[in-house]
Length: 278
Image (cartoon, rainbow, N blue to C red; front, side, top):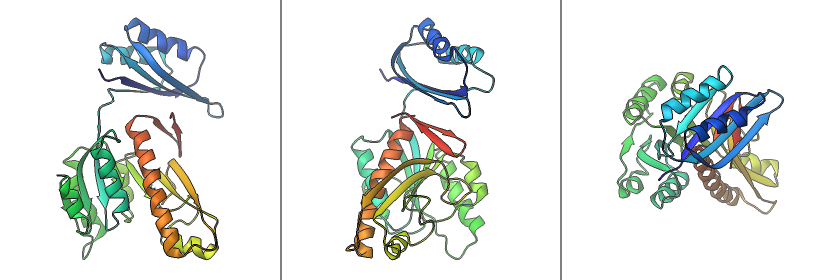
């Protein structure tokens, strides 16, 4: 039997843990894992509870709502695989890593399709029997390009869109249609080296660390809530190409870890930050 995940985010007050666990007990549910966090500065409470057992989940959710502060956000997920659509261009390292990890069951996801604005990666995608859509951005307005992206994406009703080195700036209208549902891998340790050619920027600056950042996409370029960040050591002997190779390795690792956390319902978005229960 799959475990069920309960996620609650609300204003903090005394007795929350007691009241929440009491309702689970009264519904004959067994808690197998629980992590909570209080943001004292904003008086905000977060909890992730994993439980087993059979119950009327809508009734349980209503019972929880009755004892929680007004405006509480309650999510009950049966830990089913998340459906995802992946956007890509020409670079294969992040896309192929997601496909391989998911093939061997390392990600709690179902890849519905891959959409790319170049045909370069079609062969690797179709080898795994994943639908591939080529949507060119050339010789058309951004509005038309995004309309075509949207037409492909909405038919799959995906839980998340993954930008696997998509490298196209999406409009506010497109982003707002999928609020906190678009995940990007950025090729630097944000907020450093925002924009294009980050490894050249890093090389010219003589940095000693390079990194990668996975984050939710918002209307502020590369400034959305951060999910995962990691760094690698480099030095003066590294060429731009060696920095790029090291960077691609860490991009794969960072994106995979971020997706695992999101797909396992471990991530809360609060303002421009995240709370992650690992």
